[in-house]
Length: 335
Image (cartoon, rainbow, N blue to C red):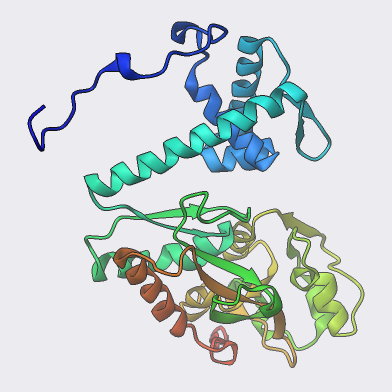
């Protein structure tokens, strides 16, 4: 071979495989393996479906198809998540490493082929109410950037999931040491101006209006906590509408369907634009124990990631303090 020449590919130089191996033609479809590994990594079909951008039923069908192909059970369904069978654990030990190698190689090839997208993850509410309305300014400032927004309420392993930046909502004690504080959170009742809630002067008056509630385990986001802080134990006499996503509740408030507990820093543009009004009674705004934090997947981000991180910090710096967000809604003209 001439000096400097690259060797030709010769499949005969690769080691032979054990006689017990299945022929390649009989191997199960590899797309099923991706679903199996995703469930095995999370031990949850729901979370695996989020990772793969599929429905839960689609992931369940992949697992059943793989089990039918191999004629063994791979998982045992439990009340909360799944558990491996011995056969499933054996397959996962081999499959997880193989899939991770494919992920690593694919990532390296994409780096050589062109720009990598900058992937940012945030909860569904933060993505819909805070990030999405601001993305236009990022596109204007950096039109060449390729950005992918991953909205999920699940906590991701940033490096394993290929995520560059995360906006997290937690207490200061729970934030990573290198997390960057974006802004704090203030809770206060908000409603569409047509309900007249901004003119209320007593907590008891809220009982005359329908209340909208975010179905979330954190108590400070519940009406019971807010009402209790004001010495009032009774909920709305008109009933409560509950939502499992925060942005859904805010859309209901925008439609005039009731009074919601507003996370003022997240919905600042809606308040500034007069689409929502803050109930401006004494002590209405309460400080949340949590704040919003920016987290990097690596200590040495590539240039595009650093640009997006700087943009997020700049947008967060423009978030007005809660005391400055209350907009006076003009009273209707007299008769």
